[in-house]
Structure formats: structure tokens, C-alpha cells
Amino acid sequence: MNNNVHPPSIDKLLNLEECKTILDEFGHDLVVDALRLVIEALRQQDNIPPALTIISKAHQMLMQWSAPTLVPLVNATGVILHTNLGRAPLSEATLKEINHTSLSYSNLEFDLDTGKRGKRALHAEKLLTLITGAESAYVVNNNAAAVLLVLTALAKHKRVIVSRTQMVEIGGGFRVPDVMRQSGAKLVEIGTTNRLHLYDYENALQEPATMVLCAHHSNFKIMGFTSEPSLSEICEISHSKDVLVFHDLGSGALLDTAKYGLAHEPTVQESLLAGADVISFSGDKLLGGPQAGIIIGKKDLLDRIKKHPLARALRPDKLCLAGLSATLSSYLRGKAEQEIPIWNMLSQSLDEINARANRWKTIVMQGEIIDGRSMVGGGSLPEESLPTRLLALPIKKPTLFLKLLREQPIPIIARIEDEKVLFDPRTVFKSQDEYLSGRLKSLVENWDR
Ligand SMILES: *Cc1c(COP(=O)(O)O)cnc(C)c1O
Image (cartoon, rainbow, N blue to C red; front, side, top):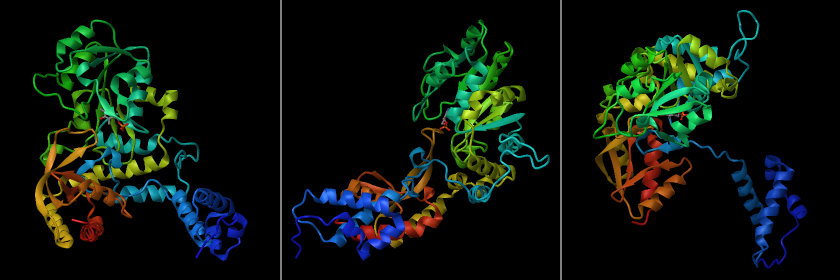
């Protein structure tokens, strides 16, 4: 029986033996804060629980406060570059390099030859020029920053010609026209929403301009009565007027996606060959590395970009540079498909996926294996998908089940179609197979069907 009307004092609770563990773990001040909050909440109730319960509630609160909010999870959605789920997972080699260089001091801005100050920009630059054949390269925080920097450094107060077919919003607030305005560039719009002709460029180039911006459509596709000149045609006509071409490539594929039964995503190398003077792309889309914005192109233009004051504000950290170098090294050695997770997922055979889905089903003892499609995501290849095999669980109240999946120790993200909960092995790491199928088995068993 417990008929306390007043909660115990904080001092009394602190002196209890049971409080010792949390005091050791979280320190006096934080424990007092937690106890105070728990007691505050209890004042509304008639019955005050025993001291032990109060301490245990405070403990829960303290654990919640101190737990990281960014946690790993299982992506069973089949969307390979899921922007909400952190885009590209990193390769083992990338992680190793990040660990290795960040657990101690490094030569981030130190020249080991001369013993003098070195350049941070140098670190991924060499690999980028080797892989792409570009004269020069520079890395910033993300591609949105790259676009802003290129436009600000090369085209502030100058006319920049851009097509209405490319006035895209990427998501997360990145809109091509807004970023252009922010950079101080003067936007010259040409073409219509669905059609752009070479003569649109010719007409606009009658007046002096500094740059033509070509932005990749990224996450949308225009269909029907459409046309756009090729990048090489645009480069030719722009160069004849001494106007430079900046290609915001978006995804930055270094390998050909057509090899995997997808549409062809323009590659960085093709953009260079077509004659683009400056090209920018993301590090964590089809490149499969850490978040970064990569700028490559002509040396004189890159030198101006690197010297711009904004470059300092947008500079990447050492973890990014270490990781990006390791990811790029996989491409240089021709090992990207084996080593980089997203290419691994793209190149997984249907047989292998089918076998994994069937193994899950055997363990879960529920559901069926059905045909489905995996998406690339990440603002690349809209409408494009890869054939896959899915574990489909017919389940009552599927939305509630999805919530339960998200509440697991390692949250599981799945999707619903036709009242069934679907799980795509393509985006689940093989090392997560056992966890996923084991969890599903026990959750399904206990689900009121
Ligand atoms: C994704 C994308 C961006 C933004 O890149 P982040 O790395 O997300 O900042 C800019 N332009 C295009 C065309 C894109 O696809």
C-alpha cells in the first residue's frame, strides 16, 4: 500500500542507494533536473508512487535525453538513394579512412614535404582530376553550395542564361532560380516549360552574357511535346560568343547506369567531353560517397572559385575529405561496383534478391514473394526503376504495423501497397538479413490478425 500524498523531497531521493547508479552515470545536476520534472508531473496525480518508481522514471528520462537522435536503421523501401534516410551509405573503405584520419591529427592543411602550411583543397582534388580528366577540382559542403559558389564567383551581377525547362526545385528548398538570385547573377530566362531550341540560345546571346547554366532535370521528367538541344550544341554556340557553360549535373554518375537496365544518366565524363567549362555534382548521390559538392573544370575558372571569400564559408570538413578520397579511390581502381554500396545494390541480380526474399519468408513463416520495382531516388532517374522481388506481408492495420516497425531497437522502414506491407531486399544490407527476418517473425506472431 502506498498512500503518500506528498512526493519525497529531491534531497531524500538523492540520498537513496538506488539513486547512486544514475548519479554516477549522469552527474548531480542533470539527475536533479530529471527528478524535478518527474515529481512535477506527479503533482497532478492523487497517488504518489514509491521512491523507486520515481527514480526509475527519471532514469528513463535521462537515457532519452542522452541518446543520439541520429540512429542507423534498416531501409526496406527499395529506394536506393533515399534522401530522408541519409542518401548514400558509405563503403567500408570510406569509413575506415574517416576513422583512421580523424582519430588522430592529420596533414589536413600541412605540407609534409616542406613542413609548411598546406592546402585543404588538395586532398580529393588529385583523384577527381585523375578520374574525370578535368584540369582542376574543388570540394565544398554539398552541391547546393557548389552551385551558389560557382555562380557567385564567376557571374555575380552578370547575365546568366538559363532555360525554363530547367527551372527545377530539387527539394529541401533548393530552387534553381532562387539560388541564382541569391548569387547576384542576373537571370535571363529562355525557352518555354516544355521546349527549348538552339535558336533560343542564339537570340539570348545577341546581348553580352557571362554564362550559360544548364541544370540537370534531376527529379522530374518532361514528357510529350518536348525538345532540348544537346549539351555539346549549347557549348559550341556559347563558346563562339566567349560565354562559358556551367553544367549543374546533380547526381554525378561516374559509371553508366544503362549497364544495369536503367535509363542512361549523363555522366561527369560525358559532360566534360561535351565541352562544359565548369561542372558541379553531389558526393552522396550516384557517386555513393559522403555529403559533398564537387566542382570540376577549367583551371583558370577553378582558381577564381577557390579564391572567392565564399569558398571559405562553404569548405568541407576533414571527415568529408577523407571519406570522399576513399570513395573516389574505388573508382580509380575500377572497383566501384564491388566496393561502393549503392552500386552494389544497383547491380544485385534478381536471382540473388529472390533468394534473400525467400529466406526471409521461410523465417517469418508468413506472406508471399511478389514482383516489384526498386527506385534509384536521390534526384536521379525519375520514373526509372529496377525489377525486384519483395516479401509481401498481408497484415491487419498495416499503418499501425509500420509504426511498430519504426519503434524497433533498430528501426525498420517499409512501405504499404494494396494493404500489404512490402520489404525489398535490394536496399537491406546482407548483414541486416538476420535481424530483419528475426524481428518480423516475432512481430508477425504477436500481431492481432
Ligand atoms: C541534388 C541536386 C542539387 C543539390 O545537391 P545537394 O548535394 O543536395 O546540395 C542541385 N542541383 C541538382 C540538379 C541536383 O540534382
